[in-house]
Length: 201
Image (cartoon, rainbow, N blue to C red; front, top):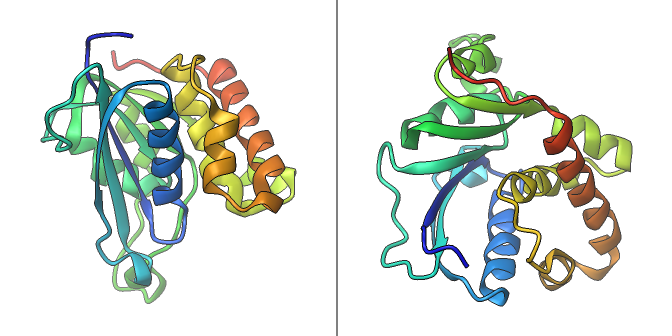
């Protein structure tokens, strides 16, 4: 087990399953013997607001909190949320982003504009893996598993092959949804392998 502590921020919109992914991830880490600390920030989750989780793991972790400029990876469930969460990242950090937009009420009402250059802007500063996890989930037959597609991508990037992901999923999702979540996880891993990481110049 590596001595180094990894710091990860997960961020999305209420209802996207950000907290579930955090629970599956921490469950797998704890079972594998890692020391894990997690903190949740729900925000206006019930109104479709921002939801974020901070996870730190390693041989010994003393605090769950990740400050500005301290995260190794940002897992973003939505484009604009990736922009919000980028403040936590180290200079050489990696973003895994769901290339997907959820239009907030101010944009829907015409009082604000949703930026169309989120991905391009992030690519100028960070390493980036971007794909539409919602489309992948739809292909699998259930759009709600897009969160686990993203989890699979993160697991591949972190090279956590020693973790028992199947058991972690079984412990955290209803039995009737285990199989499709396992398929979603596998697809996420495959996408992380094939998707090009774009480095800032």
